[in-house]
Image 1 (spheres, helix red, strand yellow):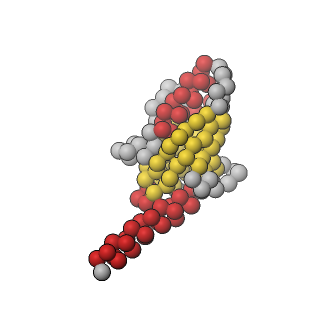
Image 2: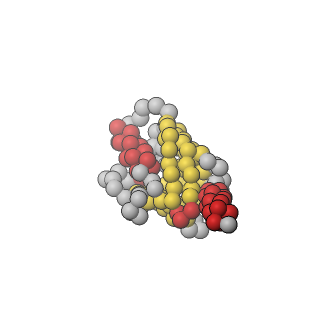
Image 3: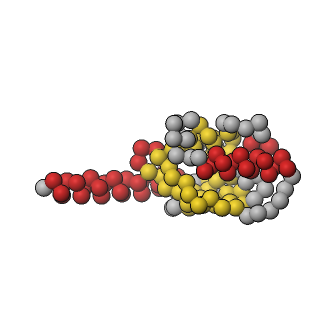
Length: 135
């Protein structure tokens, strides 16, 4: 009986991760603010689109993507971030570097109606997005 209960709990936990992932899957976002840089993110175009288990977008200069998992309890894993390697103005390249560093630090997320906030492991806001009209 204990094994059955443990298995049911495991299955519910496993499938709840898929339900949470679907809450961001198929959504598109535009960066509104970030927490730790002298660069103003609104001086550049930063977009983020989630699919089932991948994300992609436009950064200040390059196109980027990677894999993610939205887990129960607002946890998020971001992995395998990649980008094209085009060069751009130094200020835009610096802003892009900051963006990618913050994106790689994401461990949690908060999804409100038209706002997506990506947070670090301590709950500090890293990146704040508004819903894109494309969603």
